[in-house]
Image (tube, rainbow, N blue to C red; front, side, top):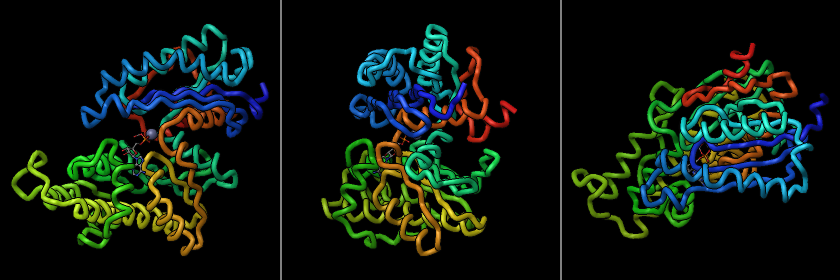
Amino acid sequence: MDWNNALILGMESSCDETAIALVRGGRDVLVSKVASQTDIHERFGGVVPEVACRAHMEVLLPMLQTVLEEAEITPDAIDGIAVTNRPGLIGALLIGVSAAKALALAWNKPIVGVNHIEAHIAAAKIAQPELTEPFIALVVSGGHTTVYLCHENGDYERLCNTLDDAAGEAFDKVASVLGLPYPGGPSIQRVAALGNPKAYPWKNSCLTKDGVNFSFSGIKTAVLYAARGQKAGRKGPLLLDEQGVADAAASFQRAAVHALVTRTVDAAKRHGVGWIALGGGVAANAALREGMQQCAETAGLRVAIPPMNLCTDNGVMIAARGWDLFRTGHADELDLATDARALPGDSQKRRG
Ligand code: KG4
Ligand code: ZN
């Protein structure tokens, strides 16, 4: 099998997006569909796993039908099936993986399990074909805030991590404290554009004293105190007017971006690499994209940032990562397992 031009079906269901894409040769997108469950989870203020699973069940097969129809292909044309099997909500992962296995069996196609974090990094390669290892990758989403050194041999070395909340989780919680709609990331970005980022002295509060890692829980409390006072808690009345909310959002965003950019660029300088790759939902944030670009340029580094629709969860990045695995001989069997807590780099180790 010549995998170079192979057509891969990518399937994603690890959290609150159901996504399917058909991608040729790792970057040529035939069709990409994403069904977000934002509206469903909005009333709960966060993702409810059981509710997410039911929504994946309802959407997955009709979406597959639409993808095949829009691509005007029959299953014969597909060369391999890539599916997110780790990490994520275990029930949600199982729905995608079970469907992918059934299709692989029925259509007699090879299957490969994809690590969701590795797929976020693969999205940067679609955006910037010149991106080559070794490079520094910042994966920043609702569940992860980690800087990796991505080696030529496919190893992902973890350099910096959050000591508590993920950055996306902090955006979501801070938005909720400020009375802004779910999901918090886009809300904060929108409101922050109207605020003064220097209104609160929070700039360095997401940088840990060890000089390496991140922390997003302290600033969350600072925003809570500013927004609702020290005693009232999250249910207390909002003490800020519209401008005050914008100022708090802008000051929070400035601190989060400052920490993410500082740690990532420092890591790139320390390890002497020429490239930085960004991935994950928070990489859709305009201030982070601009901040990273500027700081990296000043340091003589190049940055690969996926377009917005490839930063948040999607099927294209799963197909792209799956293509890479297939072409380097890493297919799986039909007993492919799911793993809620996997780290990147385990595919190489596990498969030898
Ligand atoms: O990668 P993703 O779609 O799902 C996970 O794997 O977690 O990331 C979702 C996270 C959410 O926390 C969301 O608030 C955040 O990405 N996000 C943003 C923006 N768009 C999405 N955060 C900041 N600014 C944005 N524009
Ligand atoms: Zn993700």
